[in-house]
Every structure is written in structure tokens, then in C-alpha cells.
View 1 (cartoon, rainbow, N blue to C red):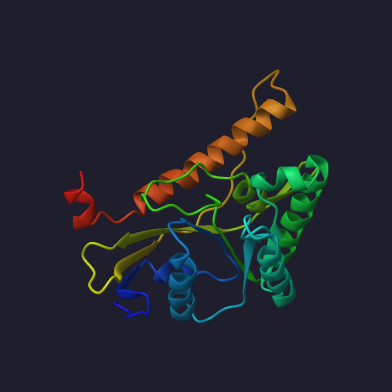
View 2: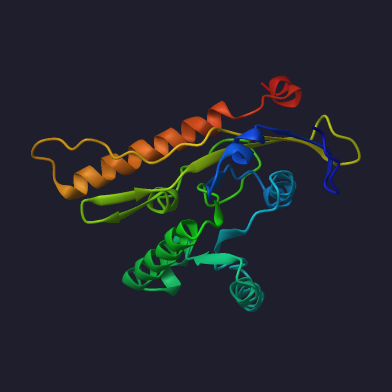
Length: 231
């Protein structure tokens, strides 16, 4: 159905029957086009019955304004609705080992939250862009998709969401928004090769998962007249 939003002329939501039919929590992997994605997801959340949700967020929101960035980061942490992830751009402010330890701790919290039946939203690209292209996916969605305890693996149901904005077809500066929810899927470990090192295996396994998610973003994309006219 079409839902009028403050920032958009119309919003079309496809595939909402997928989360409605699923019992338990989901790891939502959302294509990141702009800051409007957070507003658009509010409509999705409303349509699936407003379940308990938490989201993965960055810590350095405004690098050019440290005081404002710190204030927003503090607000996000205190809300209890966000997991704070340190971005690659913050390497200079935090030692690499400390940054990795912090992010590993946050990923463990994501796993614990999913096991409690609470949905988690994550934007794998890590940054927005205005071109409509899919940016390289970060490793976070791979690590969040499963919990590895020695040889035992607990994988969490995931669902990808493709976002498309058509600013040319909208009126008064507002866009037409298309959000397409895919089918649920779960992490499946790749088979190891004889003589393959643990490091090489983890890299290959991670790339296989990220490639699958990227392909789903492509499949869930909505081609608009504005995009076709620009080609």
C-alpha cells in the first residue's frame, strides 16, 4: 500500500508479509541510500506490528564538529536503542586494537539481543550516498549474522531491505520511496578446503556472505523512470 510521509510524496512497501509470517527476531540488513532511510523504516516498523527493535549506529556523527558529535553520540548511547560502532574513519582517534575490541563487544551485544527475541537493524554499507549505487559492505553484518562458539554455530534469521528514492517523479521537492523487503535467510558456513589456513577460510566465508547480501540488494532494487531517463 502507499503511505504518505512528511519527507515523501508517497511510499510503496513491498514484501511486508515476510516479517509478519516469521516468528522470532530478525537481523534487518537495510540498503543505505540517505538519512531518510531511518524515517522510511519507521513506516516498515509500523506495518509489521511495532516489535521491539534496536539499531547499530556509528559514534562519530559529525567529525567536523567534535562537541556536537559527542553530544549526539551520548544521546544515542543513553537512549538504549542503539549499539555504538566505531567507524574506520575514527582510527586516528582510537588505537586499532581498542577499536576492534569495542566493536567485537558490540557485536556480542547484537547476538545477545537477537537471542532475546528483539529485532536488530543494521545498514551494512555503513554510509549513505546519493547515486543509488551499492557501496562495499562492511564486515559487521557478517559477524552479526551468526555466533560462533568453537565448532558450534548459532545463525540468526536475516532479511534484506532494498530502498529506492525517485526525486524526479515527486513534487515539491519530495521523493517517491520504494522499500522492498526480501525473503528471510540465514548464514551458512562455506566448506573448508584441504590445507586452507583459518585466516584464508574466514576471509572467503565472509566474502561469500557479503556477496550474497549485495546481490539481494540488487534484486530488491526498484528501477524508476528517473533512473532510466538518466542513462
